[in-house]
Length: 194
Image 1 (spheres, rainbow, N blue to C red):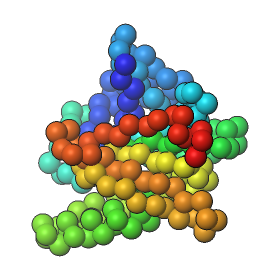
Image 2 (image 1 turned 135 degrees about the horizontal axis):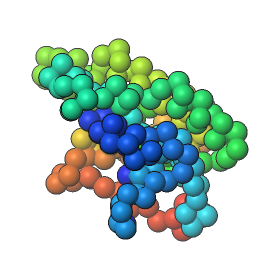
Image 3 (image 1 turned 60 degrees about the vertical axis):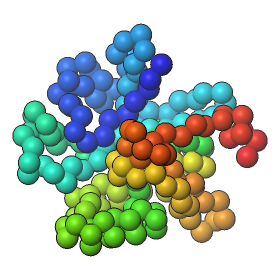
Image 4 (image 1 turned 180 degrees about the vertical axis):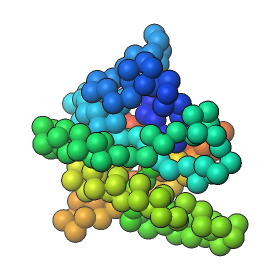
């Protein structure tokens, strides 16, 4: 079975037509495919998960709104409010799944700066991209999960996001399909022990 969260370039008109975007529970699209809405919290094998999709498309100027780009791709104030209410109810999150990465992850910030220099563009260092990462950081800083897994940058890496309390969050960035580190395997038994 495949479970998925939204990112950028997803068809949000389709998600709305299925009453999935803004839903409070997982939405089963078929026997094998389930969408996890923004801010949803659930438990598998005694491990508490939270999801928050969304990311900014740096290539909007080459896309068509409503066909290959949707403004709903960004994390909204409504998403932040819902996540806050979920964290009031479920304060301890073990694993956080997101499309974007919260701001402040040093290895990613270094990668983005190097990529920007290499290509001569501000690769995802623009104000809108950073604003989305800052919005995500607000939620992640409150959730303080043991592990956060994200995509969006098509680069596989791991790092730590420190909070100053001695309990950092491990960050796992996933590469794109066909590349090394395009997925991760989580042993929920290890999560309970560690």
